Image (cartoon, rainbow, N blue to C red; front, side, top):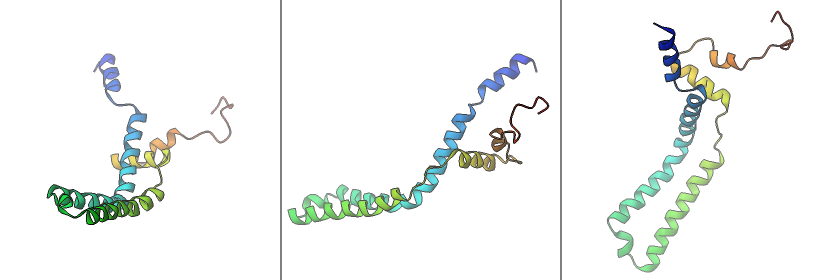
Length: 124
């Protein structure tokens, strides 16, 4: 394999930052979904009722009560879900990539390591 072919292969791989962002997005989704699905269920149930045109057939007071109940249910499920959400940090993104790809000895974490004695020592 020539040097130009090797350099083309290196360019073809997405940058590490993009892969870390994708790992962070996956972590965020995995943290968000368990607390988000009740709100999706409420919205889906209302959508089924709306597709059957049930709210339009209800009297005005019941129609308003249904809308208030759906809005209250969504608020009651979304507020705690979003309040307890913790965004993944860089360390969690690195650990996720290392575990998912089967990398041993935590090489991505080692990229962020610094010398304990400082970088002034020429022997280091």
